[in-house]
Length: 388
Image 1 (tube, one colour):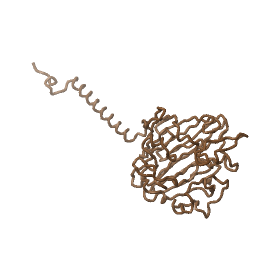
Image 2 (cartoon, rainbow, N blue to C red):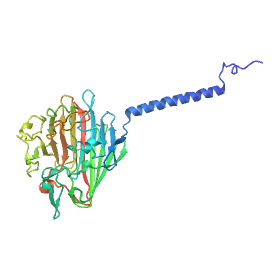
Image 3 (cartoon, rainbow, N blue to C red):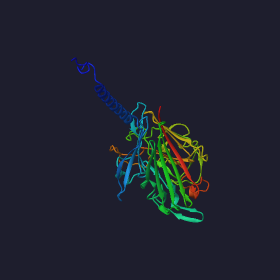
Image 4 (tube, rainbow, N blue to C red):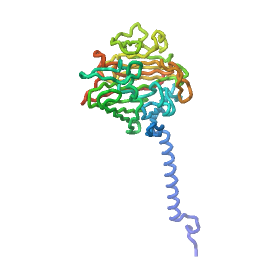
């Protein structure tokens, strides 16, 4: 009897075809899955959470890594809301960390000058740590000579914030400051939200409410060095401030209460100037509040621009605040080292801190910093990165 061609192996049987198709489908699915996973690993902007260390009470601090599609990377810990690292490209595309900081939590638990931290309940100084509000006198903690600075002995830079990843670009931090903390009245509920966009902007939005009238002045305290190398000072960075007035201060850096023009002074940065061009004319260096040209508008406005000629990196700072503190890193003295073991010397980094004016609770002519029950405090800061 003749055998069929199928039985002789010349024509595949239906069963053979089915098996072949199944294998082909499996292989195709595996290839597609692998390609998809590789694509996600390259392009994903999902926030990565990892442990950063433990506090003395056993609580764990975490580190959150935000990355955009252009490779900009921000590492933020919920201890103090600190920006631990911020990598941006130079004109050749080389990514480097442009902020001062440490690699581990223990270093942040030690003494340091507010590297990268969120600042509150009151950013900057309050003279003698005293103010009067609604007929009552309040005494705050004293932690800067005779004065109160950046919220006191344990400001918002030294607390563990509750953290929540909202989406692939957004990290939200929350902290409740109890009535009487550091001497402040009222129970303050604060939210700080970080967003990293594909427009190369790191956005920080503050909101706060209180159950009793209290001064509130929140800001952020990153030290920038756009060279990416803190061995190089920031004196050759070029700075432009959109501020034609500033608030002169005493030797203790307490505003005198005056608001004067920057014209014909070493505080004139209305056009790009090297930071170090006139710094020797400012005793102690720059650590002063500048009055924004849009002061009082409460609209998001360009306040400062910085460019670093060598790398081509640029930084623009936008805010809704009426003032901005420019600090040239005068008190850095080499006793601290970054994660690469580089000593952080004087002028290793600069700060641009959008804010209400220092000592406002004691200066009735300054914009008010009093938050009342039923009101919502809002403050937005945007750092925009670029190259030229």
